[in-house]
Image (cartoon, rainbow, N blue to C red):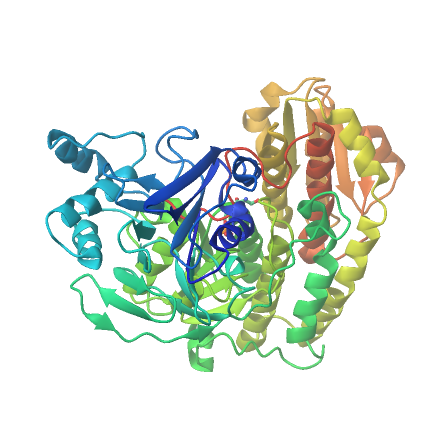
Length: 613
Ligand code: AGP
């Protein structure tokens, strides 16, 4: 949510800033801007909308003193509409300081009032602008550059990752962090800052993770990290676990479609890493609990947001079914304002693609502070959450570019399958033969997904028929109920069609009142415990004239009478069905959005990494 980059010592600073911002565009696209030294002033260029608009604005006009400090920003608007004035970088009244910010300054109104009373004129509606004026105010009181930042930071409440440059200190780039991600990239005669690794990976893999309340004073060949009292801190330089990211769509029209098609390989890779044989117990060495602690485990709480929350709901079903251990799943944003209850034999699992989602990060910190062991399932082993974790279970889906999560969700599901089997083996809660069958079936899944991906005609047809509908309903029960939620979320976020997922048995308690011939109802019908029940709930919907769609591995005449569209998938045991039933729902959302001409990889109002509460 907002991305910042900065560099010092780079001979092509503008080009670096633009390339860095391109790699961070998943974090927001309401506006983009850069600030660089040009002649004897700070030059700020900014444009509303996507980075492309900033590129067009610069269009060759990128004259700046190379080698000097520069900062850049990509915005996801929180305070103030997305326009050029509210775009970052912001600049102080006397043009001495320019800043970029990711986060929210909670006491900005109070600070703005104080500064306005002293004659400072504000140009934007943002919370960020106060920081630039505050720093300038301390400069004018006689503080040197870094001290002016330190004093200003002490007045701020809230979250920030900041990049700061000064007109009169062109050889230094400053950065600071509190509750928002920021790394310092250490290069050869040039250094960098960025909200996330992809922005600097082509230039360096050596980084320093800034912690809360730390300030970086960065020159081209040296740096200092200080605390808010000005003490110099010793920091470790770490190596990023990534190769430079390819942002290629590999011939696909959108990243989302490419990432949907990567799912079989993502699952294969996870199984190759973790499930070497089906007749040996799984060894999840990433789980740093003793055998005794695992045997005694009597409760698990899982916290997550959005798609990760849906994966967690499938995980709840699996762990409870395989081990009998009760699992509570809660949206992180709800968890953090409740009394956190942790007990001696419980653990907390945080699930997050990015590992940076502010609500989930706060939630796991709260659970940790209460003494809970925190296991993090994330696609980013270099993230803040990964660094907070007591146990880290990386999901290795590779970089996910599209804002709508697809392959990371499948990878998270795999993490839960492995964890549930691992716990069942330790607790001896399932017969060994059943576990062996489950492991064998897991290995079959990538191939079965490939069958769905090579047979998309029905899904396409369905998208043609329903792309103009305004409301969609998804129903399922049991382990597929979270799939209904996920299918509805995918459709909402990329097509802007109102879609809701319901437990099929709940329809008759209210939602059925909405049904008529204008509303499609999609039923997830996996053979198993609840198959007949979902079918009869589907018949109730059919009787109210709804347009009926089924995702199922069954084929029979009765289904043909109930459903207008049947999307067939290969058979798998009900416990594994979410891995398969999700795929057609991702594709349906994709094709509908494509027919509607939506901006699929960067849907309006969204950002991939939600780093504000
Ligand atoms: C998924 O398609 C969404 N874009 C969103 O709901 C996302 O899953 C959510 O913001 C959580 O992100 P995280 O997994 O990075 O924590």
